[in-house]
Length: 382
Image 1 (cartoon, rainbow, N blue to C red):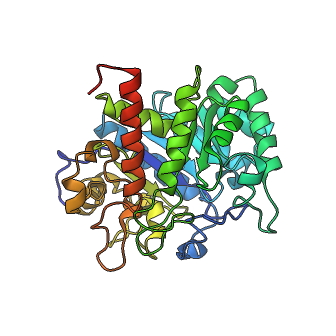
Image 2 (cartoon, rainbow, N blue to C red):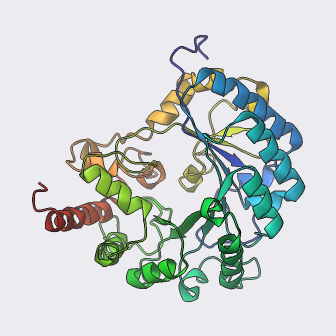
């Protein structure tokens, strides 16, 4: 590591893997069902020692970085951590970070209780829930270990979240994984009926050597067609439900910037801290090959060397992976909109990440249709 911190890479998001196990078993999960089994060797839950190490690192980080960053609790299923340890974690974090630093949680919603919501309200932690759509869509993939669906359990959790007195703050919206065989309009109407403040949609994980479920070829457009149908429902709604991916793409088309990785040319500083304190790359890289989310030299947050690590060439190289290297991407007029997509979607066994996204055709189809619709709504748009 270099010994100067003057050019330290700034952090945008710190994702804490507080539990390495999950109470459900989604068919498409990149953690458990895409070939990487490193989770088996991880601590099941984040220890007090690791939590304390994280908090010591946060104290140092805010002394060197003026930019506010966000904290995200993740898993596995983060609520498996338990009420007592969750409160310890959140109380320690908030003793260091003011409310100007967003803290959130991504959960499957099944373990939400009034006590959990009270703690999250106390320490200003918002909650996003994963759900894929109506029951016949959701229960195709988001299932329990006994193969039974989870829809009704998730809806119960969402209901508790919506009914909490502090719901306006706590309810951060929904996260859905796309099933391209489903009806996008039906999914949109279902989510709107839940009264959610927003929805984010994700493509299923996959790459050129292992195509995502529902995609028949690298140049097919099943997901792009689905997204255009979603865009149509969104545009035709006089009071549309905020959809992050559509909003971000339209922002870029109108001259703005994106809010999350995988779109546009913004380079985000993201680190993952596993249950034992190991600092990892974006964990979605697990779907590319076993160990793809690991740094060559292991680093642990408990070492007290986070600032030095953020300044290292290894972290800079990892961050630069967000920028596509393929000739097709770098000569594409739409690169400023799609950004080359998520890193994991570029993987191919014979040449690594030096490829366009496996969703390139889908994204180009969506962008073209989005341009048409914007020009219809704004005649002066070119």
